Length: 258
Ligand SMILES: [Zn+2]
Image 1 (cartoon, rainbow, N blue to C red):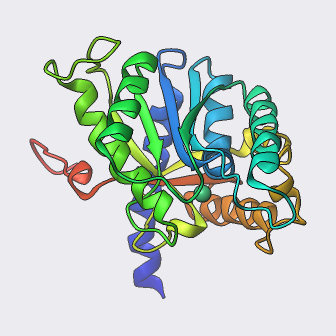
Image 2 (cartoon, rainbow, N blue to C red):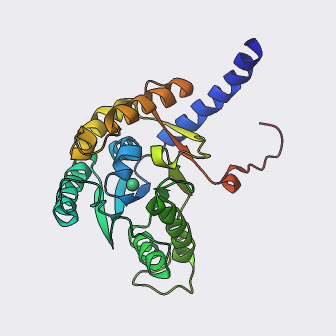
Image 3 (cartoon, helix red, strand yellow):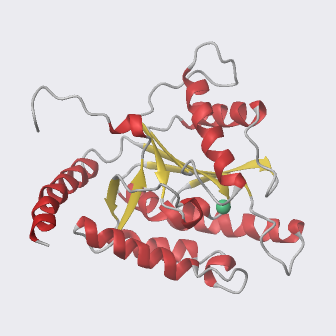
């Protein structure tokens, strides 16, 4: 398929340029990853968080629920405590700060209360980059997180929204994680090289029993490690993590052709 091969080369060059730009200026970013359940942010984008921490940036995770309903052998209360402990270990390994939302697994909904809560976290943390769930998902909590976070990003920037912290206008972008449950319509737009961070990612995510195996039949560790290799292959790297953005964020206005 020579035609396809020719058309791929400029695309890979563009990806390399994006990767080069992302590596510059470490230390001035704050990356806030917001997941519906403890573990979502780490398994999907923990390698990016580890990379940015290594570059000197601040990285923060907000778990909206503990994801305490996912273990058929334990009560939600007992598994929730386990998930909280596992999340604290994972955050420590990644070098991330961690925050826990007050919602219950399976009951996360896009309410005014949730939007206000996340907006205040955004004002408190002052992220330059927010990473969360893609808009389409098998899991209602994930879809709710997408809507809550996008509404909260707007609220956090508005002078008229009154909360405990002043408005935040330093956000450079909202990015969506490559989550197996949120795959419908997801096409990576950015690829972040995580070759040097995969070992840290693995050490972090295996703090969770559901990643090590024995709770869910889904092979989390194998899937996300293989996915990083697949994304890396098309990005010309050993391992990479893909991120999607909203269609409007893909608009580029140029003075002439690039
Ligand atoms: Zn989840």
